[in-house]
Each structure stands twice: as structure tokens, then as C-alpha cells.
Amino acid sequence: MGRIENKIALITGAAQGIGLATAKLFLKEGAKVLLTDINHKKVTIESEALNKIYPNQTCALKLNVTEEADWKNAITCIEETFGGMNILVNNAGIGSVGNVENENYTQWKHVHNVDLDSVFLGCKYAIPIIKKSKHGSIINVSSISGIIAGHNMAAYNSAKAAVRHLSKSIALHCAKDKNDIRCNSIHPAFIDTPILDELCKKIGHDEAIKKLSRQIPIGHIGEPNDVAYGILYLASNESKFITGTEIIIDGGISAG
Image (cartoon, rainbow, N blue to C red):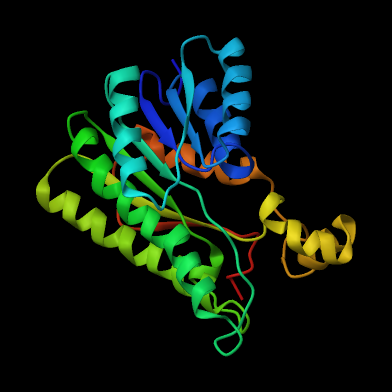
């Protein structure tokens, strides 16, 4: 038996990076997975490739996580396709570089819309269907930037910190409601995913990785699977006594 055998999961931002790595790991461990992403073409290609390895365990759906109607459609889709839902992974997100003075208000709102409002919408519409199943788990992918601030990441720091606290509020709500749903957040540091593309374009991929690695006590940045395994643990019944907290996956950067 896999670690999440017979569970049903919805993952956002699943066309690449941490979302795709998590989807692959979930499928390997026995779950059925709805891969969602705003990039419908890419998430469909990835889902079709995975379906050849894990027949009838996965499908894809276009999901703009900032659109309420898209979330309602996604919940209907997973219920009709797989018969329910046990796990929600709110992974979709964007980065932004800018301090409180030079960040423009439009970008500020966009970052919060994608990184924070999407988590609210996902949890709001997923909880009613998850509570029909037993041992439900919500994992919200925040960031180490939601715990440690930077002078030039005003919008990103704010949004990711809010995801951390929102996750705690949701966990307490679910506990009070006795609906058997746990909610936790994951806080990665630098991970080799497309979110680093902007920096890589400026100074080159190898130099960007070296620059970021120098900030990590363990000496290197993370890989998507480093985060995916943490998500898998929180999704499984192995973590049945864990809710309202966070897992930090940062190579030691927050220890100092």
C-alpha cells in the first residue's frame, strides 16, 4: 500500500516545479490526482504523460486560482471524475521584487490575489467536499519569506506571511467544526523551479544558483522533491496529529 493509497487530491500550479513534483509523488504513493494550472496546455501534457504510467489516476484542468468560478468548476470536476476529495495542495504562486516605496499598487494587489486570495478561495470551496471524506488534509505552500522578511520583497513577504496565519485560522475552524480536516503550511527557501527564472535571466542560471546557495547554511538550494516529500507527509495519515502549524524546508536559513 502507498502512503496515500485511495486518497483523492487536487494540486494547483501542477504544470511544473513543486506542484508537478508533488503530483508525481502522490501518484506513486497511490493517490488519484487532479492536476490544475492556468497553463492548460502544459498541465494537460504532463497529466497525459503521467496517465500512461498510472492509468486512470490523473486528469488535468485549467484553473485560474484567482477566479471564484474556476474554483467552483474544479470542485465539481474532481467530484464527478473521482467521486470526492481528501487532499488540497494550494501551491500556485508568483514572486515579486520591490520594496514598500517602489512596488506599485497594481503589482501589490496582483501578488496578494495570486498568492493569498487563491488560498482563501481554494479552502473555502474545498472544505465542504473534503469533510465528506475521512482524514482530510489541506497543505498551503507558503515560503520562508513568510517568516523571514526581506527589504525588497514587500508584497511577497506580506502575502506569504498571511498564508501562514490563514492556515492556522483554517486549522482551528476545522478542529472546532470536528470535520476531520487538518490544515498546515509549508515554507520552502530557494528551490530550483521557474520562480527563479527572472534572476537566472539577469545573471545566468549557474551564477544565480551559486548566489542563492551562498545564503543557505547547508550550502545548496533545494529541489522540488525536497518540498514534495514534506507535502506528502502532511497529506498522509502519518501526520494525523499535526494541524495549524508549519514545516520549514530551508536548508537552515532560518536557524540563525
